[in-house]
Each structure stands twice: as C-alpha cells, then as structure tokens.
Length: 347
DNA sequence: AATACGGGGAT
DNA sequence: ATCCCAGTATT
Image 1 (cartoon, protein in one colour):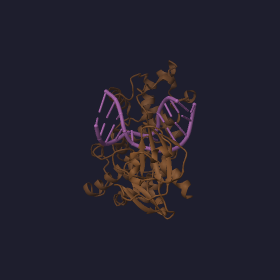
Image 2 (image 1 turned 180 degrees about the horizontal axis):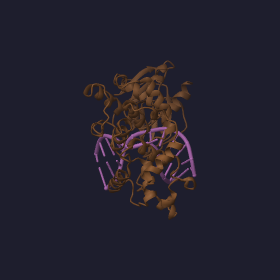
Image 3 (image 1 turned 90 degrees about the vertical axis):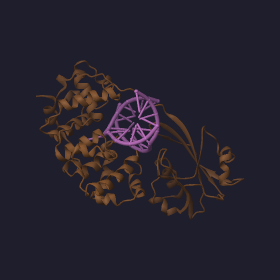
Image 4 (image 1 turned 120 degrees about the horizontal axis):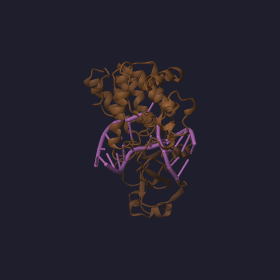
C-alpha cells in the first residue's frame, strides 16, 4: 500500500469526531477552516460552535456588523480573519446569490481564502482533487520522504505542494486530505511523534535515519520587538472613556482605552508628565495604577500598564468616546486589555 | 522575499 | 524560553 492508502486506513480507525466533518456544506466548512487557521482544534472548537449558532447561513453572516463579528472573535487572535469573513460573506451574498462557491478557482478569489483553505473547502465540500498543505502535511511529507528543504521558503512551499499533489489520492481527495492532517496532528506530532504505533514508520526516511527531530526544517526569522502601552483609565463610575483603534496596527478596529505608547518602560509619574499627556489635561491626578502586564505575541512583546486618573480630558481625540461601563461587555477588546478591565470593574 | 498579524498549549 | 498550531495579506 502507498502512503495515502495507509493513512486513510489509519484515519478511518482513529479519527476524532469533529462537527465540521459531518457535513459537506461549503459554508460550514469555510467557517471551520478560517477559524482553524494557525489555531489548534481544541482552541477553535468553541468559536466554531458560537459562529455556527449565531450565523446558521452565509446570509445571516452577511447581515452581521464588523463590531459584532469581532466581539464573537474576541480572544481567538488574528482578527483579520473575522474582518475578512464578513467581507467574503457579503460578497457571496451579492455575487454568488448566497450560494457558497465550492470550486478552488472561485474560492481562491475570496478574502481570507488562500491556497490551503481553497483546497480544503473544495475537496471537503465537492471532492475536488486539490491537495491541502498545512503545517501537518509539511511535517508528514518532510519526514516520510526525508526532505530537508525549508518549509517556509517560497521554493520549499512549491516543492511540498508538488509532492502533496503527487501523493494525493484523486479518487477520494476529501478522505485523503483529512487523513494527512489528522495523522500529522495526532500521531506525527512536532515533538515526540508516536513512531512506535505509526502505520508507515518502516517506510519513513526520518524514522529510518532517526531524524524525526530535525525534520521538517524551518527558517526562523521572527524578530520580536518590545512595545510599551500605557493606558489611561478615566471613569466616573458610570461611564468610561474608550478608544476605537485604527485599521493598521495590531487589534485593528477593536476597542481599547486612550493610550500613550512609549519606546521604553516609564513609571506612571513620568508618563503623566510627557508632552503627549497634555491632551488629557494638565496637572493630572494619578489615583492608582496597575502593575506591568507582559502580553506576549508572535512578533511583539507588549508591556501594558493602566493608569487611573481623575481628570476628564477637555477635548476628545479621534477614536475616543464615552460609554456606559455595561457596554464594555458588548465590545471587542483584545485579551491584554479586557483582562484588566474585567478585574477593575468587577465583571 | 520578508514581515505583520494573537493567543494558547506543549515541552 | 521555544516551538507551532487545519495560513493569509501586505510590503
């Protein structure tokens, strides 16, 4: 038996029961695939349930607001996925009569759908013969065939896509794709792969050469920069001054508090005497302040602190607005900020 | 070809 | 601390 046939057999015996595997409805599969981008199944599952319940069809989704989608997405990260989903839902309603496309060629045109996701949706919903290549597939192929080309270089990506296409069982692409990914996720794991119970280990180059730990090869690049977010919390107990973020930086279009970003860690007193603090008023009174909360992201480390001040600013800057404290619960607020706010206002 | 974009879990 | 997760869009 070849690799595909063996992995399909393994899959049929060992697969997890996941809700998006019980349908061929392109809309539902799209929902699951976007949510699962760069996200573990266990983390994405509750969000999938939430979105499927809120938006049973693509028309329901298209009728949502961006604020609402981002609020549902809160805590999952990579929020552009949510924003792009709304664009795509609306496009499907307008340009495809509300019928979610199932062909790779149409899918790849939509916002938030790249090569992987187009292959996944087209194969799962319509059995189109497109091979998915995700993190799992890179790992399985690199090990089984002993390929040491970096998986994250443009050249490497082409190589692996080519091999994935050759290995694909064109007669049952959906099953094949599911099997490759499930096998990678459950058995051929990044650390401590379960080679002892692996159905293909005797033909696996990495196993035979004892090289599973060194494959796949990945170029690492990430230079992490440090940023210092100094939030000012201004509240009279009824309302609080909030800020809607712009559409460029992290947490685009989400809500946080007015902030002074500094290039180094400063103490509250120093921050309030910064020229940038003038927009909040002069001779500011610091009522209290939080400790420094370290919020670690892929490309940056955020050092966040909250300064509670007494004065209300005379003029509101762009993005600033007052809202009832209760309304905060309905707004999409990033993890590093909502943690403190919840604690501060006791909800 | 590089970089930006979150948050969490495993090791 | 480091890796990496059912990746995509932008520069």
